[in-house]
Each structure stands twice: as structure tokens, then as C-alpha cells.
Length: 201
Image (cartoon, rainbow, N blue to C red; front, side, top):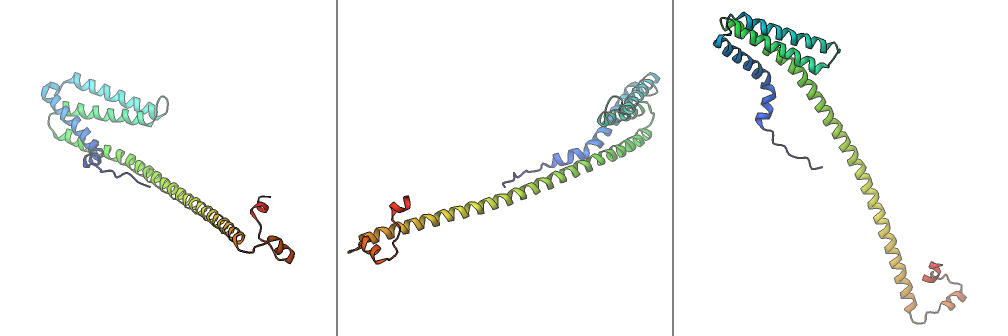
């Protein structure tokens, strides 16, 4: 009945949407820092990044085939492979144009993959909310029916109590009337109100 009021923080709404761009931008910046510190035209560094990116992609392919993992592990491996490839190119390349091109492509792919999961999460959240609303409505209907039934029972009990009180008052009033003789009523053949003793029998 009383739903909690949640104040949505702007940062909590923006952070998930900005996460893919922040991740690819961080990799690009670190790659360019690596480039400025001696990675440019370093064959050993480039070979290391190629080996790491290839190994991560192979692990992702193995996980996607279902041999030793699931879709979450496969996605993580492929994202790591892409990040390593972007960092390697950003560190090895002379200019900034190729790293920026790869950054744009990586960001677009990251947002494409994230949008799929966002749609799934939104669909599940809507289904859960719809199911919760239906259950609340169903329980509210049952509560209303039970409240009506309880109210009817209470009113019936009150009516019975009022009838018993009126009957007791009538018996007491009849017994206090001057000249009241139950035997005379019986002899006359008139109907007699039941007494408390007879009711208890």
C-alpha cells in the first residue's frame, strides 16, 4: 500500500549510460601515455599486446561455444581482447588518427552490446512491475471481499445481540406488569412468550 519514495540521483542514472565511453576513453588515454613513454614502434610491446589480445579472444570463443563457460565470461573475454587491441594500437601508432578511429569503433560496439542488455533489463523490470501490480490488485480484491464478509458477520452478530436484548427486556417488562399471571394465559389458550428457562432447555 505505502510504496517507498525513491529520490533518483542523477549520477546513478547517468553512470551506466556513460560507462562504455568511459571505459574506451580510459584505454585510449592509457595507450597514449604508454606511447609517450617509449611504446611507439616497440616491436616487443606490440607483440605482447597481440599475444594477449589473441589469447583473450580465443578464451572468449571457447566460452561462447560452451566448452568451459557462459555468455558473461565470453563477453568479458571479447571486451578484454578489444581493449588490449585498442591499447596496443594507441601505444604503437605514430599519430592520433588511427587510435581515435579505433576508439570510435570500440565505443560504438560497446554501446551496441550494452543497449541489448539495457533493453533486456528494462523488459524484465517492466514484467516484474506488471506482475507485482497484478498481485497487489488480486490481494486488494481478496482483502475487500474478506472485509465485506467480516462486516456482514459483525452486523449479523449485532442484530442477534439486539434481538436478544429486546426479548429479555420484553420478558422483564411482562413479568413486572401488575396482575400478570402466566397460568391464566395458559388457561385462556393465548400464546405465551418463551421464558429464559424454556430457551435454555
